[in-house]
Length: 295
Image 1 (tube, rainbow, N blue to C red):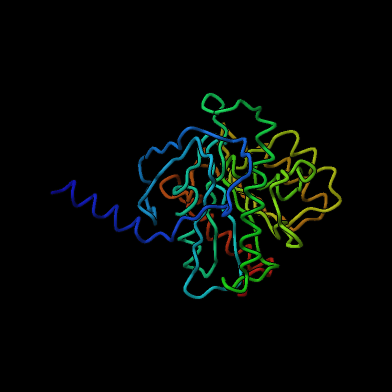
Image 2: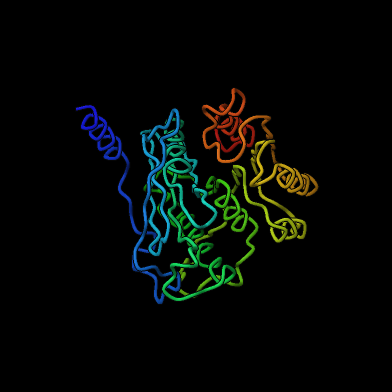
């Protein structure tokens, strides 16, 4: 009876999530990121999880997305790129959970399940460098969807940001810095619709030397909200600090939070420390300071 009860709860929560859709509705011509089958596993549900789910996807050939539309949209929208080292997509813990929380604050969000890089399982081998333009295209397509459906979703086209956790933070930076524009695949067709975000939310982001160098070469940078843990040994806080300094030098309106407790992969921060559990509220306050949200 107890197990049945838990199963029913999980089913009910899952049923509350909006419909998951194909990112590229007409398919991807000659998609090079191809696996025999997509893989899914589950992990422990985190304290305070709004979805009650913790699914992890790998071997993703067909990217998908979920749009969370609040009852009263305030015009702001966010693409959310979960983390997972580009091998996995932590779809709920670093995606739908944040989206459900944002909806309570009137913010529309699109949670992206992007194509992954699982080298041993690829149907046709490709290098990581050859993979990146395709996941880059997935993220830009997500922005395109929000901006092109702005009227229907109640979105201000000048208030669309991109957020990312860990590897998703690296992806957000690639897009925000327009680092792979010259390598974007030919199957993309964005027309005259801009796929550049208006701001960045970077949650313990992966920051490579290439990203740091690209930021240093830009004449201007987007508004950005950075958070990291001082104890993080996967995406070190020192890298975040260095990149923040670059944003500061370009006079970009950026804010940085380094939390003493939390380590890596703290998602909402609940259960990892007192201060770190407030980062989502701090993000909302920053959005108000930046005038993306009204007081």
